Length: 212
Image 1 (spheres, rainbow, N blue to C red):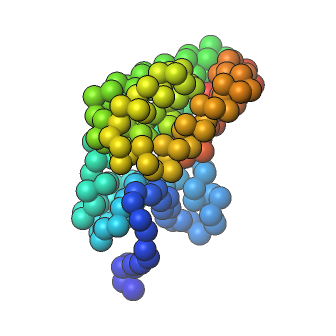
Image 2: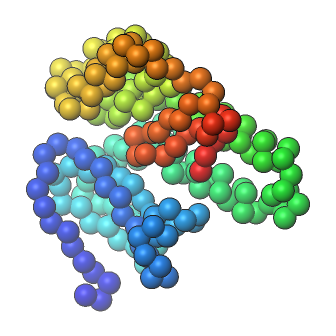
């Protein structure tokens, strides 16, 4: 009513959510996946959260969530979220001239730049996990980077260095199982493989380019 709405429910521990605002009434796929979509992904816990914004989720403010604040600090430490890096890519492409958009060298340079940003982000995730054994987001970092930016043996070592409560979480168990599967089937991350991050974004196409 009058631009105010509420969601209620019960959760245990930390979880993720996706929220999108359909400004044009074009439906869910457009409001989530189109370039420039007004969509946010965030973590929260069993908390009472308030989200405020005049006209866009992209500039919304969150209050009342310790988990959200920790996630924001984590993203800052690793160089931004995947969504932020994707937005940078899309903005640079959108602002390019019509000629550049057809230029293979320009597109290749754009992909190289984005790939390097994601690589540096991945390496920073590993460093974050090493430096923050009591942070839930160290577990998130390992889950996303294991097998892609670090080998599974290193990931398992770092996982074992996290506090015991974190090691009991389902995400930690899934990471351990991922290591077993990779060792069993010899899964690699060579060029041409298709890899998704923790929120389902495809990282590479069959020719090794970043897919947005």
